[in-house]
Length: 203
Image (cartoon, rainbow, N blue to C red):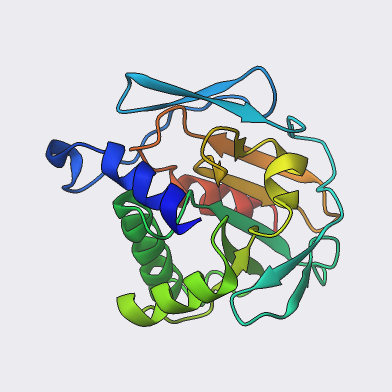
């Protein structure tokens, strides 16, 4: 995973190492869809193309603290899955940092919403990342490194990189998907605030 993440990071030009922008663009998940890097390199997605109205597939994943995480046990809360490619990429550093800050600054408004971050990194890599970046707060980091169950079952898996396509997936209290944004370009960020506002309207 470290080698793949380094390869992905090295593909991003020096000109794009500044602040990455939020986009409202959206694209489909799963087989027969692609995602670009700097608009000129294209990669294939694989797996089941999750859609609004589908139920979140039942999976047992692992948290950064190496605890089991069940996608079908949401305790009656709305869940926001903030999907990162890899914590070893500069775009994800920004995405994760802004996510943690947003949740910290809006803790009261998010009391009925569970915000999660998920990437294809190992739990150990996520632990290291959180420590190095000084990130903490009410966000659970989830690893999809072992079998890529999340990537395959949601259609966020990038075939050639074994990483996840940058996305936001909102799951309702009944575990049904109510909102999806998958960015078509890896150097852009999904619109977290828009997803949160939508989630709040469904609380």
